[in-house]
Length: 294
Image (cartoon, rainbow, N blue to C red):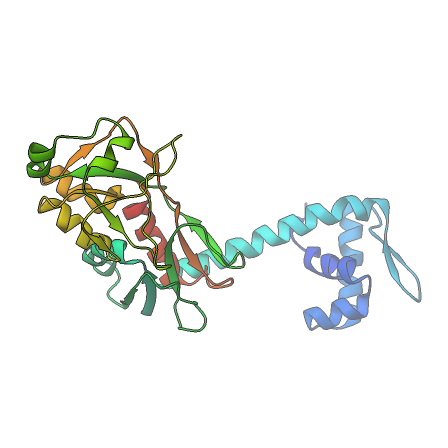
């Protein structure tokens, strides 16, 4: 008994059905009209049904063809995706990858890059650490890590976790001033304020409460500098959890107002459409998801 190849004729049928034309399908696939016609006729003979109505002017689908078309399209797309996946796996990440990230993430990501580079010796990374909202195409950036919602919806987005804001102070400050009992008590404390790129101090935020405008002796547009000031006992700081993790673990800072947490802005990786299949980009997405996705 002759074995029927399950995919035989599916691509010519799909091209013809979508173009409603044997000649257009032949041009698309780079073969002759006769080859397309014979292949589709053989498929119809194997299936035992007519898939296409043929006239001198046009080609239309029979009811059986209408039913077969979406199944055929999905099968062909899956087969192509499988081939592309295998081909991509065979290509190791190589070359230069340019990655933009905000200032708070620089100390988290850059020291961890050897984890990515060690198994990929052909890969190199150039990091652009800035709070400026860089335009990927204009500055030849392959990937951007963003904190907050992406302004450009055309970019491919890989969600990471949503960090939370933590409010903390040094033990020396708390011994001197005492801990705040409620967010409103911050009005009587030295609250260290982060100045946004727009030039305005960012308020302290707490879930289900109005934002608290900080009032203190120090403002800065660099979050790590404010954390350092808090460690030195200058006041109370509110920052994203990954910025305070080490200081909290060592006891250099102590969390206050733990009963009043606040979710922070979402983090995501962004790349230009069509670039997500690049081995370099896929390798970095995996690395960043493991590092920041927890």
